[in-house]
Image (cartoon, rainbow, N blue to C red; front, side, top):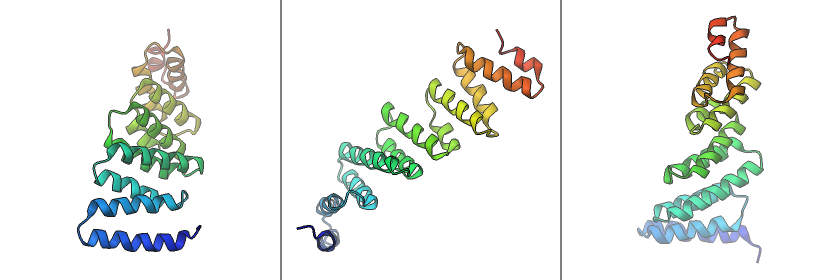
Amino acid sequence: QNQNVDARAYLTRAEERRRGRGDRKGAAEILIRIAELDPHDFDARLAAARARQETGDNKGAVADFKRTADDLLDTGRHAEAATVLKEAAQLVPDDTGLAERLFDAYLLAGNFGEARTAARTPAHWKRLATTLIAVDDDDALDVLREAASRQPDDLGLQASLARRFVEEGNAVAAAEHLR
């Protein structure tokens, strides 16, 4: 009937009553229903994902976290999306696709410290180094070194590192990366 405010108020009271009598699963089900009322209510959607997790439905929780993060990314809320993806990644640490999305979200948010922590593959290190060079970040040289050490056959990375050393006047270090 399109009365979301009334429905939310009713469901919130029902959730509080269920939780009050110790019915955690029932309260979680209500939180999930509240989240379905308004797809733009990210707080409710996150509460629903956490409720799924609390009831042992990790697969559903991760799916909710991913969908919420995608919508946050679409609205330009990169830092919030990264936080949501990090929460999902804690549930499934071996999910490489999720790790990739988390890394991307950190880069988009400009959170290079967390991106560095989340970097898992040589490609991550290369993208991070390239980004840091582009924004002239103080950590660019360290990350570029790390990327070059992880991809010794990438001549572009080796040349970038040599160029940075030349710019700093360190010919000996530059020579180590020239072929």
